[in-house]
Image (cartoon, rainbow, N blue to C red):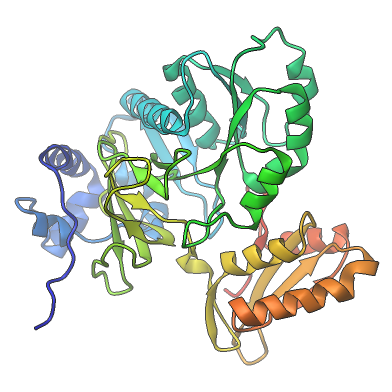
Length: 422
């Protein structure tokens, strides 16, 4: 007998919030039109929720104004995604949405260990309509922490250290891990009471929750807990990690998460698939069953930290960044992780394009000293055969070469993966 399909289990409180989110979403032209057309325009039982159509990033780009459910004069912020895998998406936030964003990040930072009176060094930009820096600042303010908005490069770290700061205060750093590395040594010199590093935007652990090359590199710079966090601009919902956690915990008051296969079927805990999020409590542009484009597994049961809320495993990659190289299906993130493990501290960019026959290929460009190239190439080939089951092409170049590859696809933030297959 075939086993029953796995289903998302909603608590009574989540169901009540989902009903509110559903009614708010129907105030927008997109969902009024979309739900009626799909005949999935009721929400009486859990199965009704599971039959609601998936909302994609393409839907948000192509029908952006139709998602708005409040008057334009009630919008307090416009934010946009980075556009890593396509055109940036515009998201409107009301005053209520900003309050929700603050509560969301306060809970995430609290789980990481931040408390009132602590300090948070925000190595994330607050400009260019990015939501991340704004979110962390709002969350830290709600917790009663002191914020230092250093920006991604932290070039002003010595200057900031000269401020009259309480010497006994614990400090946390939050930023993109690959950008943090070069600055952590200097920061450690000026801030001797660092309690933890919180990485955003990049995976820090493998599928078995072991520290990956990026995480190990950060720990070599600073012997403190290196924690991860996962969020999407569209949903403004965060999955956070504490020092004893295996995975990133879902805040059940903020979102419902589903893991689906390519046919829209639910996958059981521990099985990786498409991460689909329904944020709860959104007002200006509420979403239902939003496909983030990311791939990960959801883990149930008790966590070593003692919590029982669902945990999202490390992001294995973006569905749009799945390659089939030499007959092997592999996420770009797996290639990047392997390269970083071999070419430690060296600048890397992975270029995905099509060969003359139309098949995927990946070429890795590395800035590597000439005297180490042969040795590291042999080491990379061995590791690639063992872990990837294929050997992508390695090419050595200089900063100009890497800049040329990155210029092939415009992006609002620094990237190590450039995809020109389309």
